[in-house]
Image 1 (cartoon, rainbow, N blue to C red):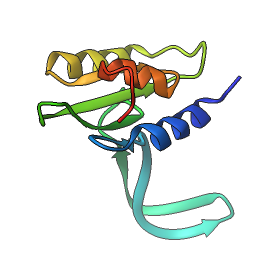
Image 2: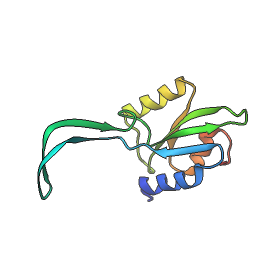
Image 3: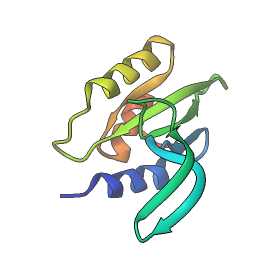
Image 4: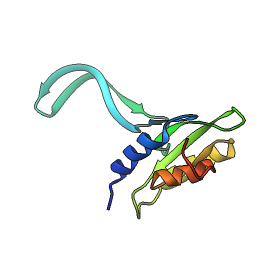
Length: 124
């Protein structure tokens, strides 16, 4: 079975061309501050503050835009899943919000799924 990372790399390689652009959206959290001491994998920070990365909790793995035949670009959000993988409630809510706002969003397990999301049957 192919991993989600391998599927994501294939989608980025084959689907981000022509009028379609996709970018990796890393959603994560970490800490920032003044480094006081580093001891192996232990880091002590002064004035530590949480730093969030990515659009928001539940936002899709790949984001970008798709320009249709009318020349208008629409927001594009692709949640990549390996076969058998399931979207979380937060991910489904994000997809629904993008769709309600007029964007293109959905779950993809292959580049062909992205083509179906775009309603073209072919990747451009």
